[in-house]
Amino acid sequence: MDLFDVLTLVCGLALFLYGMDVMGDALKKSAGRKLKTILGNLTSNKYKGFFLGLGVTAIIQSSSATTVMVVGFVNSGTMLLEQAVGVIMGANVGTAVTSWITALNGISGGADATEWLNWLKPDAWMPILALIGICLLMFAKSDKKKDVGTILLGFAVLMVGMDTMSGAVSGLKESPEFQQILLLFNNPLLGILAGTVLTAVVQSSSASVGILQALSSTGAITYSAAMPIIMGQNIGTCVTAMLSAISANKNGRRAALVHLYFNIIGVALWMGCYYLVGSLLGVTGTFSLFGFAETTTIDMWGIAAVHTIFKIFSVTFLMPFAKLLEKLAYMTIKGNDSKGDSFTDMLDERLLDTPSVAIERSYEVADEMARLSSMAINYAIELLDEYDEKKAAKIRELEDRVDVYEDALGSYLVKLSTRSMDEEDSREVTKLLYMIGDFERISDHAVNVIDSAEELKDKAIEFSDAAAQELKTMYAAIREIVWITEEAFVEKDMEKAHMVEPLEQVVDYLKEQIRLRHIMRLQKVECAIEPGFVLSDILTNLERVSDHCSNVASCLIEMSEHATLDLHSYLHQVHRNSRDYDTLYEEYKEKYAIAPLTKKESITK
Image (cartoon, rainbow, N blue to C red; front, side):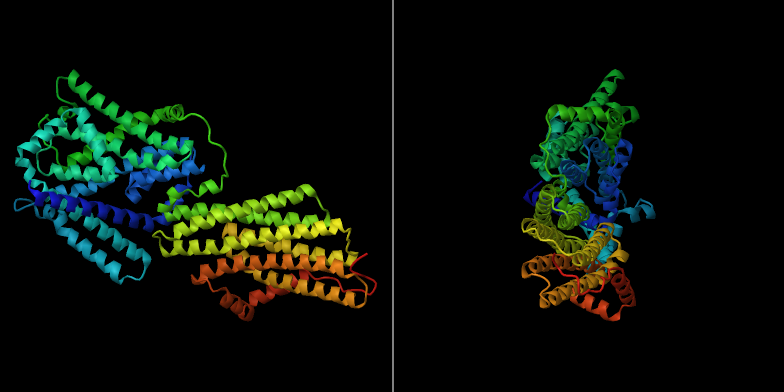
């Protein structure tokens, strides 16, 4: 094997790794919505968790990515460690799918082969897939079709890389040095170490198995040499999760340890059984029972089979002891995490590599922002009727939490927006970035209302019965618009979203009417100036709350219908051309009508 062959091998490896990366990213992007649904069905049932991990890994073609996501979920508190154990086991089995795909390069053809077998060779159909992929990527308008094209191209590059590696090492069969190196791997410990180091370097068990499959094309690797290497590859794949867990909390690190312990114990059991059974029966290894002697060479299909059988073996033996794996992780990392905020913890940066999942977690934080803002403004309105120091402190605490959520979520979404994602996910990020500011401003106005309530208390200002009744009508309208907006956002209810703008216009009308009545009373010298300032502040803050509700609802509607964010055009169109808007407006105007002003009533007592 000369320098040119070495460079060809490196080139083939680069193509293989790049193809895997491109295909994996496109699969995650294409399956984003399904992936979000699958991961949303978290369950404490370890068997369901197993199939969850199996399905996700089969979709995204990477157990490392799945395990890193699991570490992120456990770290953020959205998945319990006991749930993670089953998912991790499923991820280990799911990654075996890739080895069967790459084994397609091991199909034998030639002049003596049947015609259908020749057509199964990648050389026969890979150019067709590559052509379809490039056509979809260049000419398709749909993002989904482009993703399919990227998947096909990534797969084609992967297979080309595999074929290039196989060609580069083909001359090693006759190399005495290579034979001597392979003999070293007959020592199980050296073989396991080699597989572990190789996988740790390339950060992917699928890639390291592909390299071993390429080497097996030389026909020089035996089952006894390949077996320990494959075991080491399964241990090496834990490195990615372990590195990811360095910055995680204790539970996140425990999840990574469960992955490590599962593979180490599985390897120990497998190798122990392999050599023990072989020793008891007087043969070399359990595979000898099926006609494979120590010198029998292994091919690509054999590596895929051993890889898969080992994983199924590990799950079969360790699934009943899932609780013990969990306890072992707790024994290794003792103590409890200091409790942080459960919602900001959801924004784990490990999930950024899977945008659809990160968006789902972002919505959970935004939903909490909506609830807290709604709660704050409702408490503030209650203070205007009866001031309570504890309730005022509670509102300020709510506003502080909303501020923290906005800062954390805004930074997280900006980072997320730099990742590759489909058009729908990109719209969701834009929508969230726009709306969280409105929720934060609603909580700010709640604090402003506290200032007005404190001024009423400190200066002993009381509104007349008529003025108080007018304000109560305004309070009721604000409570309803905030409630409708919260429901529309949290439940993604477009019907409720369409109800917000007509009510916002009624709130504007109420504000002007109440102010007009106040001016009329001032002209008749029936009230003082100072109470009017407090009234004006209250009306201004409540009206601005309704404006922010309108912004949220309009954003929900505009983005869902037109995939753009032009609120001015949307509101202009609604006000001019919507019969439903006019009907709702008249209904709300009648519902929140204020009584006519009488001469005897004044704004203050």
